[in-house]
Amino acid sequence: MEIQKTEAAKNPETDDTIESTKQKQPEEELEHCDEEDELRSLLLSDIGDLPLSPPSATQVNFVSYFITDFTKPGHDQYIYRHANGLCVVGLAPTHVAFKDQGGITNIDFNVGKSDRSVLKVSGKRKKNAMRSESNTALCKVSTANDSYIVRCCVKGSLLEVNERLINQPQLLNSSADREGYIAIIMPRPADWTKNKESLITLEEYKEKKEVSL
Image: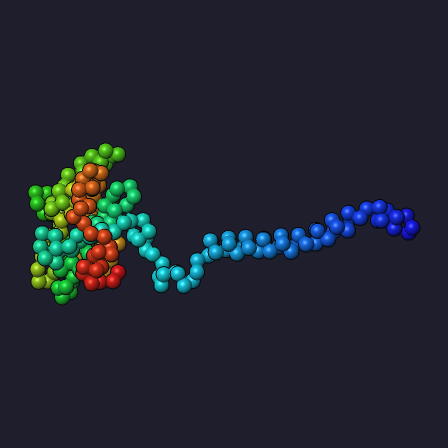
């Protein structure tokens, strides 16, 4: 026992080291907690900032544009543009056809000089794609009281039309912005830049038409 006391007396730095270690432990624990809180704040959103409903696939993968009163009053259409340049074209919620009682009952792709529904595009070069102008007719939609010509809205290559609508025109009434899309068009970058000048954004559309989507 006497030897141990003598050795402790000979090493006064030991007590200082132990005391310093005890002081560092709470500081390190506090820093660790701060790091965890910071990481949690980055990974977990404040519930107050979350939307009432999750964004749709369209909102996540596409940028929404609209054109209103195109060629005629009430002829409102949407153009959803993907990052790869493809544009999905369809009827906007405020299109005049939806105001007719019973909604749209028929769609006919046989307009202009050819039937758009027999269009068969193949290969990377999109062989057989039809070159279209913004005012080129895509189809004719009919209601119980009237019929309306739907147009391409953008200049480019018409790659496909939604043939499903031929047998299921009701999709235009129930989900025009999803399964009820009308066509897919690939504009050239230069053509898109020019076309974009005549389009409005989603927010501008909602403000202009006084709708909430």
